[in-house]
Length: 336
Image 1 (cartoon, rainbow, N blue to C red):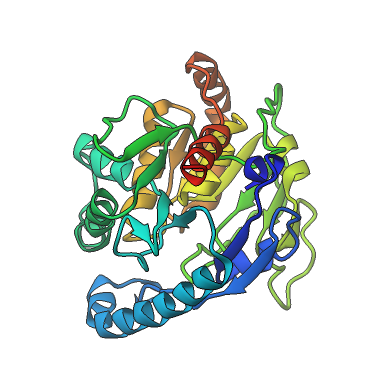
Image 2 (cartoon, rainbow, N blue to C red):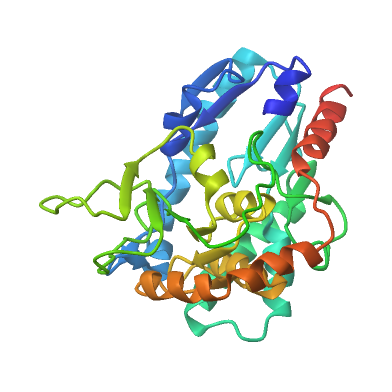
């Protein structure tokens, strides 16, 4: 959006949840509209594919409601192009005669799933029920799919898929730290499935900033830990960090990778895309994966391997920010 706004594009956004919270304060957005979100069902605090599939009727009803609202907004505003992010409201390449562009890396997930032979059994149900559907939808529906990746060696789909570099916000440029580690940032998802943080060490040999989590109630302040809660701007914390601990969502992994930060990826259990994003990071040699009950142990392991991760970044080919390329393709479609 920053690149499009610089080219004097007017940007209206329909979103939900954390998107509303964040975009309300972004100057690039002209109008912001609320939309109901689709959620995975859960069991025992983790994603449940069986319960999600059982709620398919509710999902279809929600899609119908969303489509009606989107159609009304499109008719009222008549945009030159529609850009979606993991949205399944549209069933045609051109909605009301307007081209539909998707930001979606389902083809990366599809091809990476075939590449890695060590994938765990627990992600297979979500992959075949959700990720394959996502891939098929994007093969058939949008006019163009802009598919960001941090690993250009992964096989690319033909047709309407166009690979771009990771799409990263301004201010998240490479920030390479050297020497003894001083700062670790734990930045986990704010969704219902985001990993919890339980640290038991009395004093760490480095400072830990925890973003997106409040200090647990009835606990004393920790001399080595600062809880920041939800932050609108976390750039200064990330810039100084020697190590990042993130869930496996592509946005968080992309920004950490683009900043050349060694990382520990904590995939949400049973989530194929998050496991694959973490597996790509380990394959590139710039980080490691761990379970959500292993965060503290993983931090110490990653600190021991920090120089290895730093060196691996230096061996990789430069990766361009895909935001400029994506914005250019969107503008080209809008001008046709």
